[in-house]
Length: 277
Image 1 (cartoon, rainbow, N blue to C red):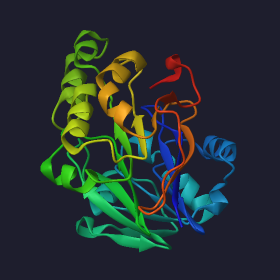
Image 2 (image 1 turned 90 degrees about the horizontal axis):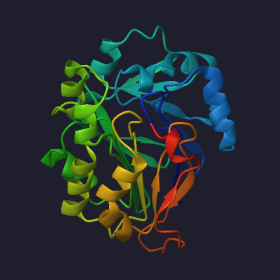
Image 3 (image 1 turned 120 degrees about the vertical axis):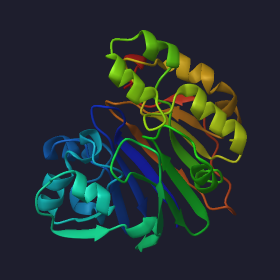
Image 4 (image 1 turned 45 degrees about the vertical axis):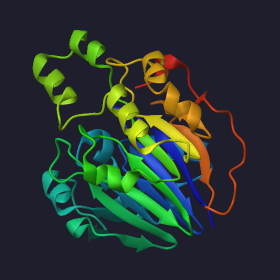
């Protein structure tokens, strides 16, 4: 029973990732209105009514802004850390599951491991998903790759990895100095070079899918991200660049004893370069 995953959108204007296995489908983050979430899920052949739960990485509006309304309309349980719950008032929720101490938990056939990450949020977490010999890591919104992060995400079969900014573009860009320090700091976002360094250390030749995500439209470009990650992208079986407008379509993670279907080694997900965020 393979893990499948797809994105509703990736960037500062809204995030949401679907992770499915067997009869269960999870939505990680929701930074869109109900109507927009329904539209984006329909494009992927899914509906909020299909969801088993919503998982939240942290309280920033591009990740959590739509969680409360969607959970209330569709009566969905929400999984999040206590710090994230306290950090943002999203009203009453039908059912809350607190992720205490970043301990693993199970939803259907999916084992979920929350991983603490350095980000400017109250108690941010990213996630590793495992099912029957296959694993998927979602790793965005962090300013530093710590040994703890590397130990959890270094051996995933598929990885969604942030490459948010180019340091030179950030330094010369339109953001005020305080925001530049925040984005480029230890609790901000990963640069192209930080993402490439992580992949160089852990290797990418074992990756069935490498998805480069959360690319800033003001402080990065598709060309710069592709150049910085070219070595890792060439070694991964399949590499795509997620976009803000359409995210990316369903991808499947094969178990260790099943060879993945051949794919193009490098591709863009559903949108031209100017749609990247």
